[in-house]
Image (cartoon, rainbow, N blue to C red; front, top):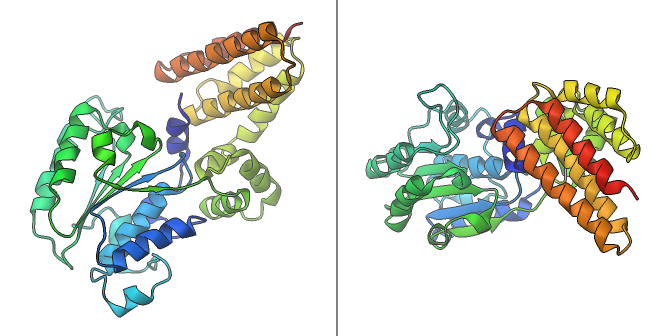
Length: 345
């Protein structure tokens, strides 16, 4: 299971309705400066790790342009951020997914009633009609793609046609969790803007706002410290029993190579039926422990090879468990079995 999947599913505050942005002052300034220069690139590829605020920044930019359609206006020239008040009509319409000049492309529910794994090509083709219409309320038409990583070959080609021949006053904001994997033909037609992971302090502040748990200082600090700069991951840790689950995994790791079957059964039960994001916490905890172990292992090729082999088996099994919705308990026993073998001797 990828961290992108986990963090996207963990996010509880919809970026379209989130007014506050923590960190990324430099990136926000770059977007604002490009806009008021009057030479705004028609397409931006906003990249960076999952859960760090890319979509929040993209929606801030969209709201700002829709609310201030004239880049030469005195208010725009004097602005210091892309902030738009919650009560502004544009903010309300964007939050309600009802602004006629904003099109959002994301995965939709298919005929089976389940969320598609990719953005459908028919949805991407809507951009042709969307940008072909006459825009009201200032003339800007904006499309957000969240995320470009979820395009298949057909939908990527459909988007490319729009990028190649953009109409005037069109703005495309593409989000990517892995810019390097985006088609070169798409990257070459976009202005690249890469966001860095947030500081632990910014993660804690953002998580406090998103959850309304500002009083839970100790838990916020602990989650922020483990989140690797991702608000989405911090929110996952703060949901339910994620922090307690992580501690349970760490306790079992500390006992290796000895195994406690009863504790493994309990861990398997705790993971059973949980959200994919919780499985990601389990895998991330294991991977972090293995990474630390490798950094302290003496230069013993045999032992390092065993640890590397366990790493590959664990992450492969976790991906299969996520993709095929397999039982969690066998995964837990397999993982700790491989770890016990790798750490003996």
